[in-house]
Length: 97
Image (cartoon, one colour):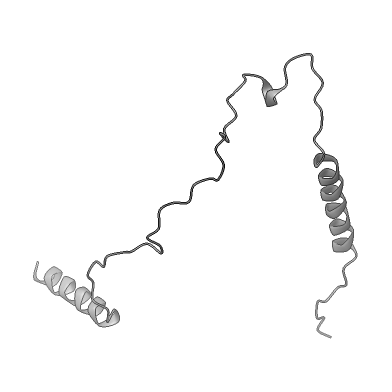
């Protein structure tokens, strides 16, 4: 029992010497005191759920939006260029002779 007390005293004194800062709780203040920003405009930005998958009723054809084609072609093209560039990158390993 006595060895346990000395061990616990030794560990707390070691922690105190390794950590020179006081071990007290400090009050954390936020970066700003202003109220949370609200969305501008008066209309609702919420689309109520329609119950259909992706909002397309059965039997109707999905119409792509204007940004979808360039985004898909651009993303696939960029991935393809990256794969080819990675395959043909120069070997920079140092070889000991």
